[in-house]
Length: 365
Image (tube, rainbow, N blue to C red; front, side, top):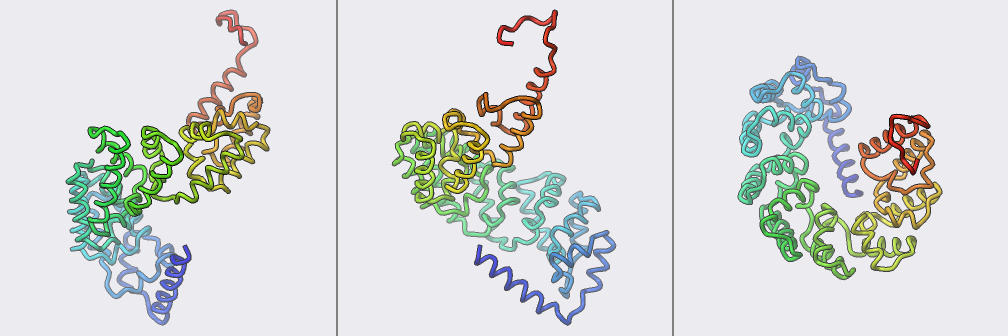
């Protein structure tokens, strides 16, 4: 982060120094105005673009229009990614050809560019990019998965093919070694890449170390495979040291043995990959709301929710006249949609008349 901040400050100082005493390129500004682009936004975010001697506003707009982009879409793209106007028509057409190999439908491609314009216009290493696309196509990966990778993790395609091959082979070998079926290997890899596009930027050695630690924690091969599939890219992001700290903290605060903790981790991987600070904050919030440790142990997945979500859900249920502390934490668990459905059922039950001669009797009520 410090390195990134330093580079940003250096870039800011350099760009400021370059623009001082210079005038904006009037042709660029006028051309953008004609497309209803908000120049104020560009001046605030990336003013240096307006000072470049050469820009291709109308040419790039024409390429996008040929792809089916409407005027409003072109305006949005230029506002989000002003550097697009510095891309030569030849470069833009090369990118278009490459992207069409994974996204033949240009209307869908325009939608991708509208959401991720930087991935289309600012990645310049065409040789590596094309080679990486061809490698992923050789693996017979779904075109949609490859296009998603190109859009959300463009850095993945800037490095050498060998680096990406090393990580993919490590993942595939780990999957098969843990008992995964070879017939499902491709589908599993595609799901993993979709869930965490940045996993290819990590080190294969870290993946191997973390899987070894899971074995050391007495998880079976099938359980390790389950965690590897559910934890998305976590196996490439955490260190064994941090996982051991989180595990030790969870074991102490939840007052359980290794076997019980492993069962909870399989239900709630957050116990393994959240930091001690994050786990402590979540645990304390739930305990302060009046729940017990035993209730948390029965429904550990509630720890995957942020403290704000937990508090908001408790307030909503209390407003419906429902005392959540008397019931399972499962009432708070689940996605937003699942929680709303639960609230609807509670609300319906609350509004139900005390006696309905038509409805069948329910002993519990």
